[in-house]
Image 1 (cartoon, helix red, strand yellow):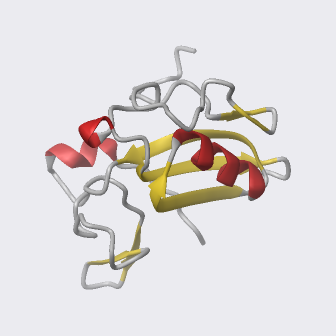
Image 2: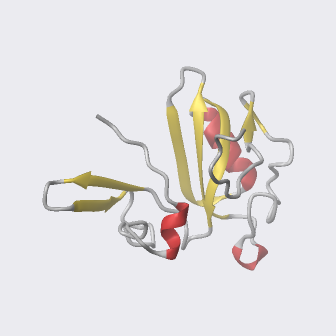
Length: 134
């Protein structure tokens, strides 16, 4: 619609109507992003929404497109999309404003990129989205 300001990749749902996409195979290396070395098992992440409207996130160091879709389905996603793939890019960060600035924390310390990667302006800040909790 005219209300859309920008669209990045990930337009193809990996889960739709509660079912993994048929094209989400154990051997895919391109449909949901190019993998390093054309490997099928890589770090991947995805986000989805449940029937009740809850947001769910899945990430792991060794997932195929199919296992990511199945994992999102198992946590109740009725619609989901891939986020990042490959070890360098899979990231989930928490930010807390503490009056003196922003504290950034990774969901898992093993995630390779710094928690501050989206605090711009940087080239990576274009990929940033947030969910704000009261």
